[in-house]
Image (cartoon, rainbow, N blue to C red):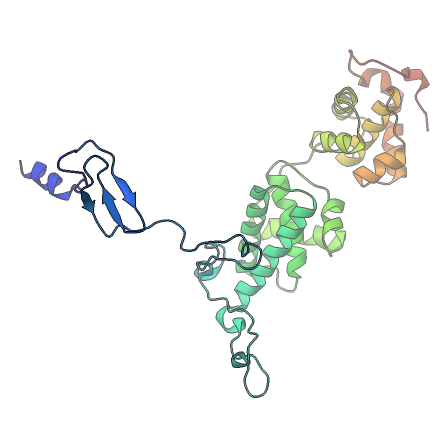
Length: 318
């Protein structure tokens, strides 16, 4: 009995009309009342309005932001980003007698938070340029925060660390990008990104899966405008060439490019080495070297159901 009475005492009282307990109450936000629709009885008063705290008129939408509550909390920054950001003053009261601003944001944010915030903006900009989803941006931000707090890469530029973190995040999420693709959207050299990549893996004691030809095939073929049949054939050729150990020591990207070149030359949708090299980020000579390795056994590499527009014996020998 004691436990039952204690449970009843802790239960929140239900607000209802004493005369019509099953009626759904109507909330009047302007007056702050809860009213019974059957008899008009005011059941509760001083109801808190949980709606927005502003009104936006049609001529004000593009002029100013009506929100006064700030951005969402950022857990990656110390203090959860609960800092005061002071807008730049325009009136005479915003400046002292020497013309200097009286209120500055620099004092409200630590240097480490400011550095991380700048890096997060750079990561977001790079990801937008190559259309990467939000989950990769979040993983990149977390990787950068871990590296920055460990201080294990002192002396390296934050932009270089951010670029390497983006490369690692792409590989960990199963959508790898090449060093050249990351380099194209950042201001850092390929060599520096590669150095930071190795240092970050060592510092965080983490690893990434080995890249394969299949990781790039669909994206390269899509960018080249090749049909599904050619993409499937190129994927089959690259996988078979690796299984037969025809391309030892070759980069998966160069093998994928050579497989795309062979598949396209056998189909009606022919692509040149330069077109494929521009998309894959490899030189023409690299494609030729990999192609020469797989050409002698080309007849074994194509899938059985492939429809040849150009026979195997008529393929370019380079």
